[in-house]
Image (cartoon, rainbow, N blue to C red; front, side, top):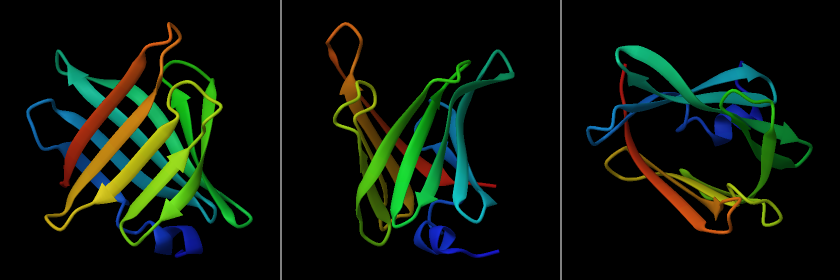
Length: 135
């Protein structure tokens, strides 16, 4: 079942592992015609620990990146404001964390993810991941 959303984000689908030794994993799959689901997790003491659930959701002409915090039902929605081939930027300037997320697949087939925002205490926070496809 290929949809407009899967055509636009075919490069994101699959299983990813961090390039360095952090052992962080991210997986993306198609849930339905308008939704791609994702999960980022790591292993601690041999057990899989979920860090974050998220999905891409198509609503009319817009695409949203929705983050669901670990062990919570709290959602943060970021609207896609730029997409170019194998890159997409999502923003929610009224939120706190994250305010900005960028996904980009480079020429070496590494997936780079950057998320930025402001913590509850007012400090800026930025995380960067570099993944490669596996499995």
